Image (cartoon, rainbow, N blue to C red; front, side, top):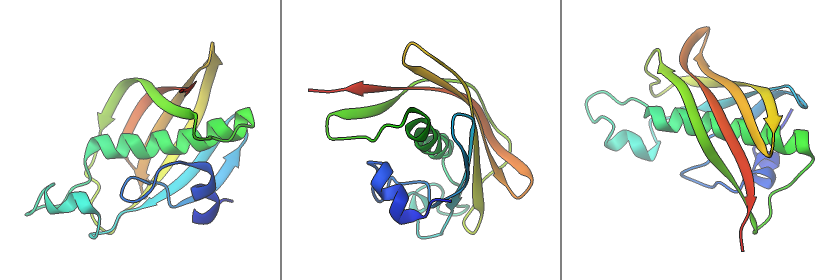
Length: 146
């Protein structure tokens, strides 16, 4: 549905902070399914943790937020520019169910729950295979900066 080249045109994030590798499904206004391939070469694994590399939970949430941003941009028909930023405004009910390790493929499954007053609320979960690794309700907004 969307390869890395298309993602790079949509998201402002770059290495080492771009955490979406491919979009598998996009149902405008409803849902996105995307992938994050987790490699031992990720810069955070050197310190988290040297004896047992585990993807930090905050980066799993960030990957979900980046997938949510792609869904939001598609839904609203917008493209980011140098004067627009996409922010987290809330994370509720975050739960980490299993570690994500090198070699895993984290499937990012995000559903748009509602849009109100410029705030978008998403139900998000990250899976490894059929096992839920992370789940949370995310709230995000776009703001123009000067």
